[in-house]
Image 1 (tube, one colour):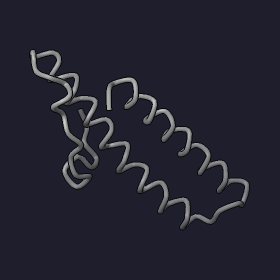
Image 2: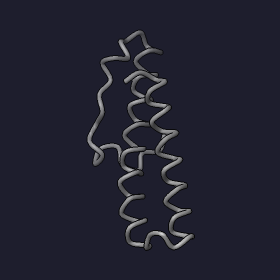
Image 3: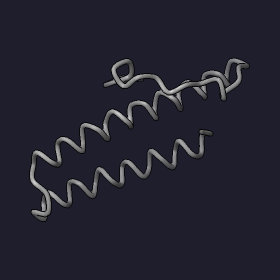
Image 4: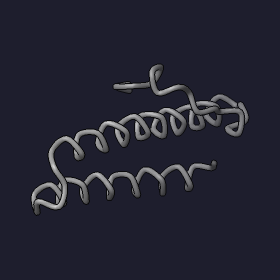
Length: 81
């Protein structure tokens, strides 16, 4: 996945997050469903941001950005850069 694809995926997940919050407010889903889906989205977002940072770091320091790999969510969860 290249940088543009990662950013597009992040945007789609943020849109999905907003849709979940709207669905809860409108009563289309319950709080438990919202929380479960949000937790999955947050883990996936953490992984995407980590992959994007890896790619940018490799590029900045003369490496190949295609060598960046998705790391397990347990490794990147709640990462703050």
